[in-house]
Length: 625
Image (cartoon, rainbow, N blue to C red; front, side, top):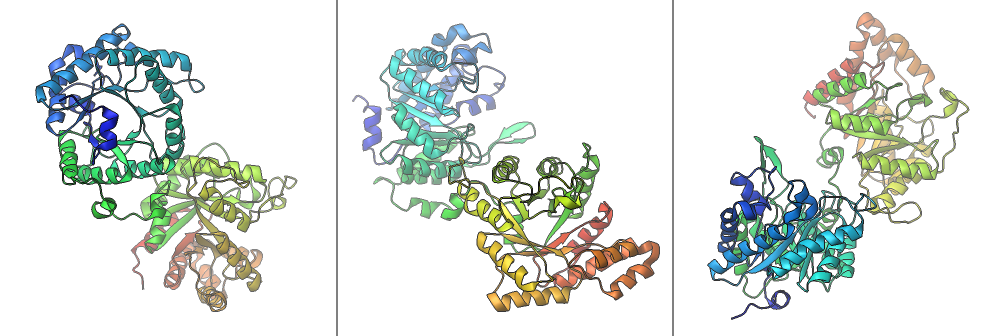
């Protein structure tokens, strides 16, 4: 009996067609180096390739992909084989056919076509017409050799993929599966969303719209659902990696096991996939598990398979572009958080700053707050410092983001820059007036108040729009803090401002330094009594005293700070030991505030990060009351 035409099979079968897994993974496991040309093995070691095809067929694969993923003239040129494009692709189809005929099963041979390995204009020098010619050369050879369909896969450039589809339409009439790959943020490498991809591939004429490679099954399932919603009448394919690859002992390892793949085969079916399989890291065992899972459902996929077989995932989490920041996670878990403030350097050198950040991280600091031009003094841009600390020290950071001195254009550009660097925590403040700093005549205007900036971040940027409502490509995932003075001179005004910031969407609060915990707690009770509970975490400011002069300056010259005579006397009596007495006082204050605070916000003085590390360690070792 002749085989059913491939698209007819997809349209009328109760379950998805099952493709094979990773050819490259098995070739590497059998001793072929990644430096070698896998495609050339069609000529050099044909039995090795045929054996792998046979194993996938025995595992239940109905569709096997030829060993021709990189068999285009650009990739073959790296091995001096650009003159053998047709020969290598024809051999790839012949080896797949040989394995299929030996199995005596109805197996579809898919000509596998990967990216060219070069950038197309405008991101590279290869023009679209040149790319189309290269694809046509490879696809013509696959079609003439007898492939049943084409799987054009693992593309990150939509323009390139559409050129490959166009080339296929020029040289043959085979069904085309066109598949993109995505980064961890559910976007292609060039920033296209699953929705944009689905619509564009439909427009370009793909018979099946696919998602492959990327991360593991969970990500592929999430992307597949978005694509299916964007193009409800289309056919879809899903072929995930066996999780994100990790290097272990010099080997590339993939964590997802076969049973996990079997569960997700059912979920892919429910989400609308008509063709499923595996990509990097998947083996015949993964395909066998998918085959067994699909065989248990002779009537096709029911409406609630994902609920039965997969972990419950809220819609809010499923749509998130990024996981919560470590700070957000710890606060959500009600852990007592220790944040420490650092000032950017005045010049180019960052050695001392990074050494201090390393010390604080080793002591147990949860997050480093980086100030922006404190006291209106010229310093390195804080988002560069956040990036350095996160990359080189490996600790979470919070970017101080003043509204003063920034117009609306600069505010939005700076936010995009910060997010692109991986900065997720933002502390919104008004900022110090330039009149008190190094450049008193500098522009001091602003377009947004702190509550207005919080609203812009939470209600625009985190929803994927700029201030004008224009799409910014994908939502940001900022976790936004606001300021609060717990010992204000004008309590009603402070309360009014706080409520405005919370309504705008603030996620957490950082307070001014507190030296009178009972007064601070009384102010919080006043807010609660008048307006109900404060639903967001409060990190209370702690500023270690360093000397008698330091205590006197804070008490007499800094608005909102009152240091009791008893506390000043302790510093006075300590003499040369005053800095360490300041550490002891800070720890005592923290213990008094621990019952009602979500954490502390430590402000080191005079660059003495060693003293701050003592406070961090003491705070972490203390048990909650």
